Image (cartoon, rainbow, N blue to C red; front, side):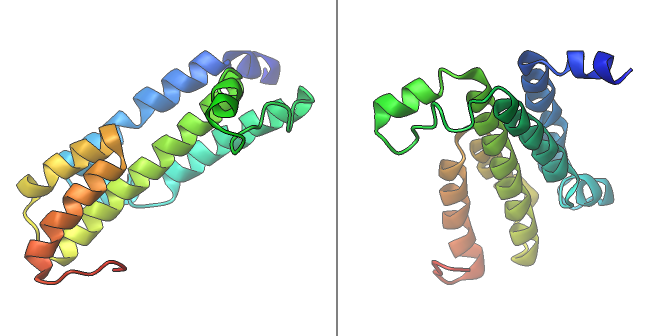
Length: 156
């Protein structure tokens, strides 16, 4: 039974499940930002926990392959980063990292917008930008937030 389950945990299946799996939560953030369902699923530890379990599984898989540091050339330059991402498992780990951080950022935007009573229609664009571009969406939201908070703060 467990071997059958593990045989389904291919890199491609994990990628597809994670990639398509976050979309409903982004849709909840966009369509129902202050709903209890959104609060339960997106504003809680559930999604980061699921992504962290996948992250840990892939890290363990790298460990079992005996390739724990081989190919980890993140800081050796752009060529090193390129060669590191040639390892599909490491590439998938970093993709899970991106999905988790961007979803966390989207959830923070919704919580913060609620605090400053920013209309939902206005934050939709920043959520979409955050989904696709990460930091660009966050900075876009920050400029909107300045208007509603009536102050500029770099560390709020």
